[in-house]
Image 1 (cartoon, rainbow, N blue to C red):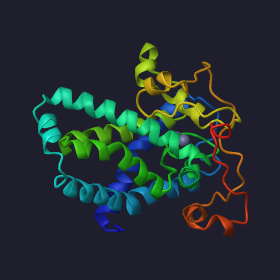
Image 2 (cartoon, rainbow, N blue to C red; image 1 turned 30 degrees about the horizontal axis):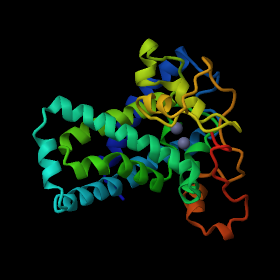
Image 3 (tube, rainbow, N blue to C red; image 1 turned 45 degrees about the vertical axis):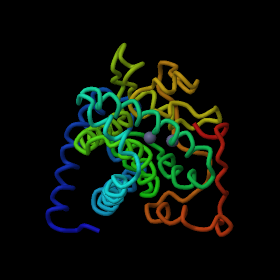
Image 4 (cartoon, rainbow, N blue to C red; image 1 turned 120 degrees about the vertical axis):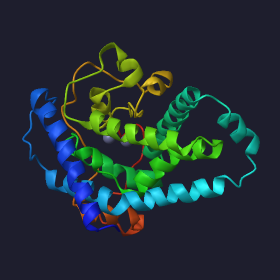
Length: 272
Ligand SMILES: [Zn+2]
Ligand SMILES: [Zn+2]
């Protein structure tokens, strides 16, 4: 927990910058007509504050811990090979490997009953915009960060490459959630964009789609790419679970038998 004046100031500055960048974009190029303070805006603000003030530090500490012990694993040959490559090739490797890991890790979190209990928190958002991007259970966040970084850490990719790319990926994640129609034109098959991820959040009974974060190439390769050229009509999940911040923090940790509401029904035929 990090409630120093510095961390509060950093959080306020981050919020102000993102607000100043994305609010005009969402007003000028809205994908959905909504109010600024739309339903559950306060809940998503709690998730934003929770991520910055509570959960980022332990996730980073877990990655540093893993990195420290990875160096002691008998992978010196592979790590030396990676270290000998030029930086641009390492960077391309970081992108490709982490994209493959995120795609399958994300897809698995939709089909695995245990993981879905944490990941569905991200899918309860009734509106998808830059702030809703932060609606994430900390265990789901930890799972995603480990999935995308662990193979790279084990392979010995330099931490600078990982840190720089993680920052870019975080900003990209906010962009693809933003309520804007802006897409990267013909590059959308390589870089994706909000429309693709909004369909991932669509309330639908169709098969899950658009699991990628950065590049939709994995979705294209494995048959989950979906882009009808328009935005979905509604977002969320059919499961009846509490939407409050504290409730969503606690509910995934409760034994399923104790849940009074519908148990999760993870299935690619249920979630999109
Ligand atoms: Zn998902
Ligand atoms: Zn999302």
